[in-house]
Length: 232
Image (cartoon, rainbow, N blue to C red; front, side, top):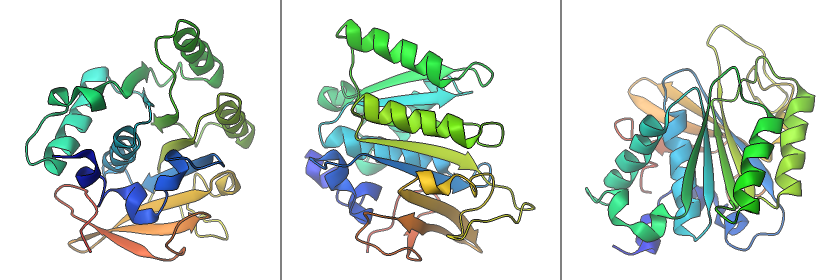
């Protein structure tokens, strides 16, 4: 199976954001929100695979999760996309991914910066796309997030994707409809997506997307059994 066959129905292509990692000029920060257990990591991994298949190196920062569990997400998603072919059998994709783990209590921009700079200076790995899964938005302020945005620009990253947990009983939202705990920092993100179950359906609402080919307010349908975007 060719790489371009895999990316046709993946999120970056569905949103029209592939130019951001395939020669795009302006860097962007994206956010995937949902209640706990609704598939944020599955969407982030699809974004990461898109970047990898387009020839970009991805650093997946897993906060509060181990390497093995994070690697399993990639194996499972790629297996679905390739009808059973595992990522370990596709070395040209494998070399474009590195997983870096942090304990929830230890993650900081300074520590991420230190560990990444060590990799770059030793010519071990230099990512172009960054996934940060498990960032604690409730206990970090806007200044901390601005620091990560500056980090993206200083390191020449093309994009950073975050995940955030929303809560059913917290009704606070921004003017763009971005729910808490991200309602006061949504201006820092070019793209905000919300996974929302409706009955037996699983929807991916585009709350904000400055560079998408789809307008805010558009909804993509997800296969609830796989969390892959359904083919149109």
